[in-house]
Amino acid sequence: MVENFVMDVVRRNCLDPVWDASFELLVTLEDTVEFTVSDFDKIGKADLLGRVSVSAKELLEGFEEELVLLESTKDKRPKALLKAGEEQAFLHIRAEGIASLPTAEAPTAAAAPQPPAPPSPPSPPAEVPAAETAAPEGKSSDDEALRRLRRESIQSGLTIREVRQLSAAELERWLEEERQRRVLRSSRRDEERTTRKANLEEEEGQWWSPDASTRDCAKCGAELPLVAKFCSDCGFPRMDGGSLDVA
Image (cartoon, rainbow, N blue to C red; front, side, top):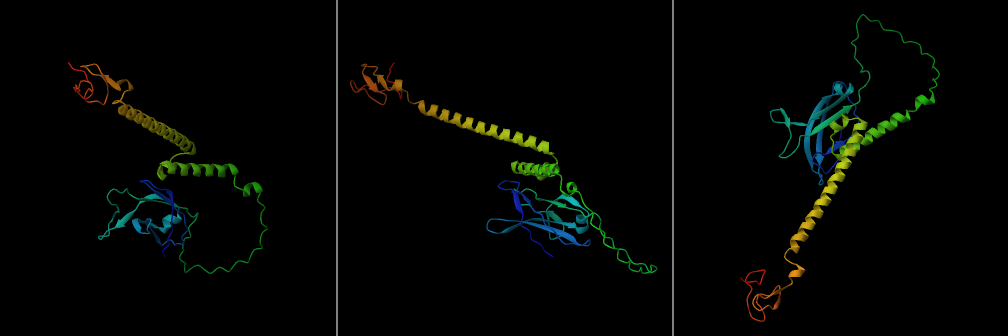
């Protein structure tokens, strides 16, 4: 039996993307569940990220672990499926356990067949107080707030493993510090842009000064523009690139 599931991307456009999906499978205790994870690009091509196998009994007993995705080689030994510059891929599996697993008991020859018990009359349904039927509002709101904080933390840069190790108060404090860091980085970038602009304007303005728009010829004293190379009255040349003075 093969089941295909398309997972939603929790973090995208980064070097450490995270996917999330939930589904149900019908298995027996003797089955082995193999997870094959592929990444579909924009043109629909599937890139294999790796495989991992878990026994159905472990899943039914309750299972949560982060497993390394591997690929079997020709000699049947698993190895990490990595290309140059790629990070190792992990699959975080969490399965809700069943309270009691059925156990098959072999019939004994000495056991005599028991006659079927007469059906008992149906008992009237017990009245459950309304306060017990509804989930506590405080607990549900706290769980929803914790899930929201975890989503925001993952989108801001934390990994799933780091998020699960922090409480709601610690996640709120980390998000607030991250927002302050973003504001500080933004102000630093604005300050650097302003400084670079001022430096460029200063460098471009060094070659020109309104006070130096005219000069006097050192030989005859005639007033000459800054761009003049020779005096128009006496023909005396400029001795350097920026002055008409002579020794």
